Image 1 (cartoon, helix red, strand yellow):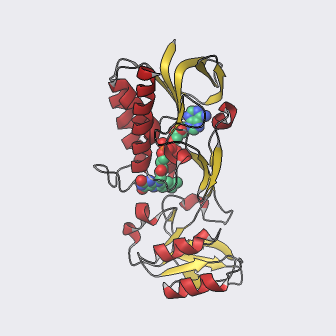
Image 2: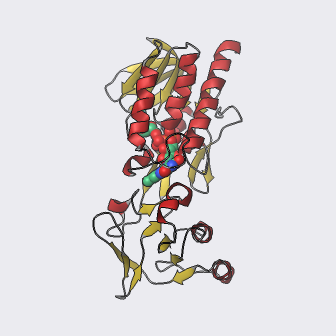
Image 3: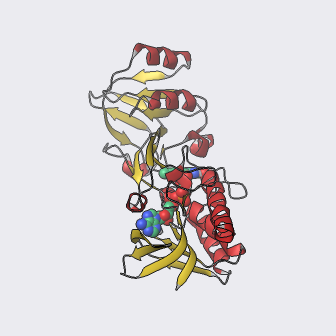
Length: 297
Ligand SMILES: Cc1cc2nc3c(=O)[nH]c(=O)nc-3n(C[C@H](O)[C@H](O)[C@H](O)COP(=O)(O)OP(=O)(O)OC[C@H]3O[C@@H](n4cnc5c(N)ncnc54)[C@H](O)[C@@H]3O)c2cc1C
């Protein structure tokens, strides 16, 4: 079956795009591998009407509502490849099946790699966090930490200090005098030692153990994960990709169209910073832009 639009990635950005295309009565196919980036968190914060809700519940509800539109096809699968065939986009699935569409929307999100510090990975989304706006209020006035990864970590530490007493763990990295001055101005404590492991009961966090045997009290640790695009499909289609402060960013215009005509990108892969609300907003722009292009091109 041929579709007006195929959407690769059906979480916050992809489902928002699909909802607007469905409401315009367009045949839209959403391919989703069901691995949203925030699946490690029990609660998602800041999205109006759903503040504190389980992210997977928000997505399940969105899928249920979308399924009620008669022109929608949802496929739970991984899209493995995409190519342009004349004026059509062809997307191959892991099953071997192929989906053809006149427009393509990429909304496949980012994949995070975390520092290999024992105790860190299992606390991701609970007490090891990426963003104080999303998960800062819950730890207000407690002992907070930031793990240094890039010079941006200095900025992150000064920001996190807004929520409570903050230690920047350099983990063996060097600090330039200007950064040291900025941190002092914001009353951020600097811990130069290498982190050995994170300790606490269950997913709670109580101390960071350092390699020299010392410990630092800490109840939440903010990290900047190393992120990459979750799929090579943007490269396969020839879309331009820039280096952003938080990982790769697929270049888009104000309509969320990539450098490849007819291909749109939305959500974390096409912007920084990253939140559910922005992903949804970008998805709405991509969906309505793709619809207008179907009408007027
Ligand atoms: C631990 C953590 C906690 C967070 N907490 C919050 C919070 O409290 N509040 C907030 O606003 N934001 C939060 N965020 C940020 C939020 O998760 C992202 O901004 C949001 O998920 C981006 O939505 P997206 O649709 O762009 O991508 P994603 O949510 O990552 O969804 C991408 C979808 O595409 C699918 N996909 C990937 N590749 C393929 C493929 N080849 N074929 C088919 N499907 C594919 C994935 O399986 C996934 O379902 C958090 C992030 C993390 C890491």
